[in-house]
Length: 113
Length: 254
Image (tube, rainbow over all chains, first blue to last red; front, side, top):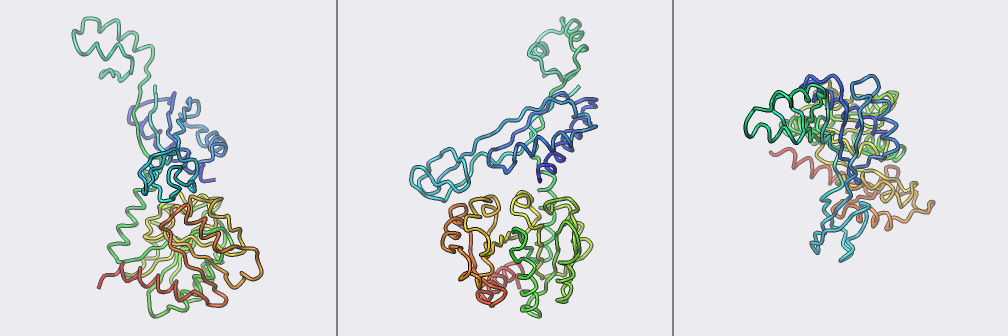
């Protein structure tokens, strides 16, 4: 359940940013969560409900951008969609793959009032 | 974006570029909706990563080789530590941080070897984070030119995300587990630099294909080093000790 730690970090970041703008309420929050970032979305949703309780994020509309995994093969230099960390390069079968997308864990923006 | 109230309506952007004649009516609109868009673009793990780098800087400055030991519960992390601390006593200086949800059982076992040890109880937490390690290090004050083992909470999932400031991450798997474990928990094997396959003395009794587990781990992380050993029979321990001494020597320039 590291998802709860992740939610608490998001709450900290959001509250800090809202305080800087003297905001009373956070209306919307936009997150980037990569598909290779080890976040289990069911656990995340559960943790979210608990984590935002009695904060100014409680009623915020949450938008989550799931960013698909992408890999670049060090052997043949092809870039391709990567679903699992153990997938081979579909072009040459190699496993020496650099992850170029899908690991994102980011608070992108807020709408506050 | 409107520089006066920060609202993000398209109309206000053009407004500031020319005359201010229509200021008044536009601002009535703004007053009804005080919504502001805040571009944050901040990594969620930023706080942990900053503290991890702070720990790493401290370890580098004091020539401390910090190792983060991760595995499922029961793979033999504490037994491997007991054996290592006893066998290499006098050759290297050691300190240990023990991470468990509850009890000081593991710290007691390490303490019995005569090694400096701090126990972190995470309560309900499923992993150590850089903040916990920072405070543990502040309390224990590991000596210059030493090896610091950080035994993480037994869990192959959550600790993968949290950098503690370690130099190397060591994942331990035992032959009583499934040989498909790297595929089931790929993140831990992806983020580790060394994989120890423990309890090899039990290989004749279990359906564990050691070549298959190595191949599976290498699919996820081709650069992963692998050492096979048994704390019971002592087989392979020398390879582990040599690896440790080599890394320690690199961390402690003469």
